[in-house]
Amino acid sequence: MELSQRGTKMGGLSGIRSIMEDIALAARDASGGTWLNLSPGNPAAIPEVTRAWQELYEETLAERFARSSTQYGPSRGSEEFVDAIVRYFNSRYGWGISARNVLVGAGCQMLCFIATTLFTGPYTEGSRRLVLPCVPDYTGYTGLSMEVSGTVGVAGRVVREEGRAFHYRVDLDAVRRQEAMGMMLLSSPGNPTGRGIREDELAGLIDIAVERDVPLLIDHAYGEPFPGVAQDEVAPLLHPNVINCFTLSKAGLPAERLGFAIGSEDIIDAMVSFTANSYLHAPQLAQATAARAMNTGVLDRLSDSVIRPYYRRKRQVAEKLLHERLPESVDWRLHSSDGGMFCWLWIDHDWFDDLALYEELKRRKMFIVPGRNFFVEPFASPAQAAHGRRCVRLSLTPDESVIGEGISRLAQAVQEMSHAD
Image 1: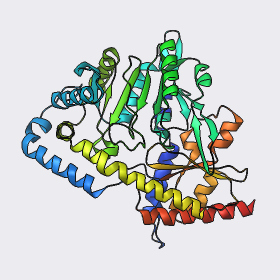
Image 2 (image 1 turned 135 degrees about the vertical axis):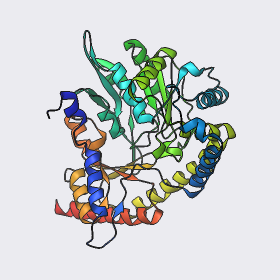
Image 3 (image 1 turned 90 degrees about the vertical axis):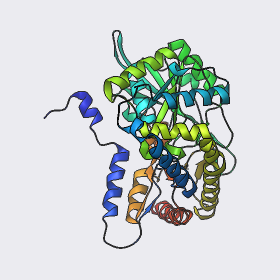
């Protein structure tokens, strides 16, 4: 059967999905040798975190199974979990929100999809697009718009730092020049870079959102208040044009697909209706368990005492190994991180290509993620096109022994690529 234009766009093979196909094939490889996977976005299964959630689920099953799993619930979210969210954010940040400012959804990505569908696409006066104001950013965002060419990425300005470090700055002038804007969306701290939005950048993006009368959605999947893997605590900001999205995925429950949005009543009301018209509501048992974790303080304890130190230590180990093992003669730089679960590596040479490295590492039984998947094609400028193909993402979730061996294989491959030029 012929797919519609939207069906063709949404049913296509993305770069990340093709990598997952490769990983699935590797899992069936009987040729011998150990495959190393430094590509996953799945958070690490930290034993203390896993045990805590298991205990919470067991308590919820014993007390709430019938109420939570044998009947439908409200599309906004269960009253218990929504009330817990309202109390938590009002107490922690002094926001003064009510239940009408909250929507519980099946993970942040679904909430981003709902908002993108509501605010982009066909309008009476023409079509509006999703604008990613600082790419590279999460690769899943490029698939949120059902329209062909419905997403545009604005390249961040590359700022070189001392030593082997660099970072991106939001190019507010370039964002302001974007036409047919329907919504802006970014992650902070970012995936893949770990870059946190600066106060002046956030203020500038909010000014643009107000000028254009569009929402700015901020995905806090790695940030405050949980899992809180940012180096410095940056509180989310409540504003009529801002949709703040949070998830429990990086706090230990990635497979439960549970997140929530906080925003103005009119925006949230439309998102609640979309939920009712599509998948009815988020999983009820997971909501009851999350409410228990939030109300008892377990969620804060895990974030502050376990998850944040875990990834900070992993980042320190990876940085040390990269400096020790990557060739001194190669112009490589590591994005300075405010938080997150990845290392974003830039190798600035004409001979380097992210897909070529990906294929070379596959021959060495190792996976990474090519950098181009975190930009939006077609690239807006030759500089962006070159830069996007000279970056790769390394995950910090595997065991330290896997990270160490993976960085060794990476260093060997880069060394050989440089000599082959």
